[in-house]
Length: 184
Image (cartoon, rainbow, N blue to C red; front, side, top):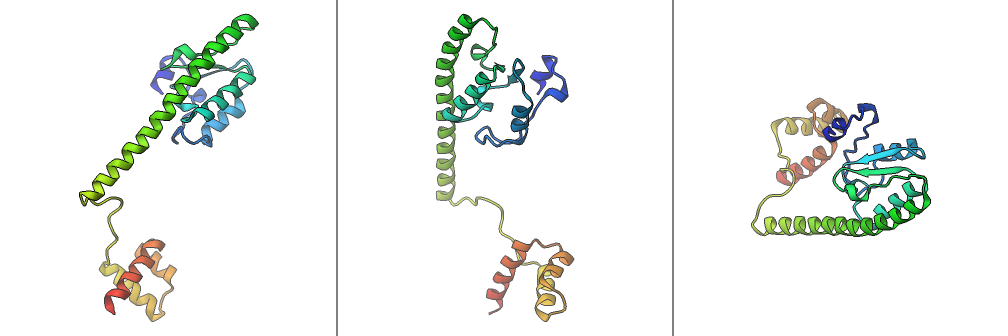
């Protein structure tokens, strides 16, 4: 964001996605696509914001090419696309950019696959070492016991017990099952 501001881009013209680049259904990115017009320039931090796999990246690139939208990439300026209106330059520039784009998007896709692989290996190693993964298990508390007893006695509904004691639905029923097994 700071890179964009340093280039003089106003806040209202900056579209920020919180979602990963692997998902093309990013809300702000889709809004940007709807608003952009021929001759506009979009500045991306990196090519990976177009997509993480080669096909998605190339498809997005072709979309902007078809609509003659200029693309600039802060981290990969050598694939910037600027439509000058001179067809010879545009053809040569386009060929070079497509070759570079294909290579870079293939590397981005490989990097994503590698990250997922390393993550899976890390999780497997942690499990093998007996490390606890995920959220800590919910515990039966005195509050839950009170809520359970009121619910089972019929003086309150399950939803009422959840609200009264601030217990989430999934936790309530999970704890109820554990509690019933415990008191058998």
